[in-house]
Amino acid sequence: MPMNKITVLLAEDHCIVREGVRRMLELEIDMEIVGEAQDGRQAVALADRLRPEVVLMDIAMPMLNGLEATRQILKTLPGAKVLILSAHNDDAYVKNAAESGAMGFLLKQTSSAHDVCQAVREVQKGRPFFSPSVSKRFQRLNQTTKDPAGPPKRKAAKLTSREMEVLQLIAEGKANKETAVELGVGIKTIEKHREHLMDKLDIHDTAGLTRYAISAGVIESSVQLTII
Image 1: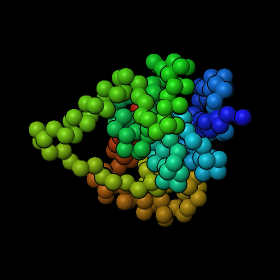
Image 2: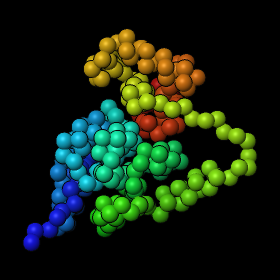
Image 3: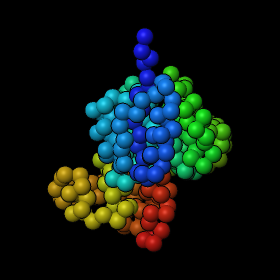
């Protein structure tokens, strides 16, 4: 009787990393790589078409970051399990990963092949799986949220998926015309999204939006250091 393999979609913009993970998972008899994406938007499209059980997702990707891609995938494919594999474990990344609906979070620097394969199996079964340091951050962030002591914090602005896409492209240095072409909409629409972003965030210049995108984990800090 043939074994039911865990179907996996890889979303990673660095080719050498993606190839390494693919070869690693291909050695497992209970796993099958059904697709590979090199940016977040491609990951969303492939997940919708291929219906994988597990999506192994990088965070820092062009076009659409892995956290927003995770939100969009789970909206259309709620049964999928997303496992983050990232080089970043800053509070913003960990917090946003939890809010995006990711089932697990592994660090590239410290995770072995065994860890990744075990994590894929665990999240496919609906069990959370985190690198030890990430798990500690989750616990600390949860404790901070529950602790009523200290001054009240400003409530974070709720951005739509399209606003998050526009924010990322702005932070990556794209002009309104380039952003419009990338998203397949008119320039006026992008200008309106930009206005809404600035109003919601109370930020009124591109440099400020870029700083916000970095602090929120929308893009890597290394991407735009020269602009800020």
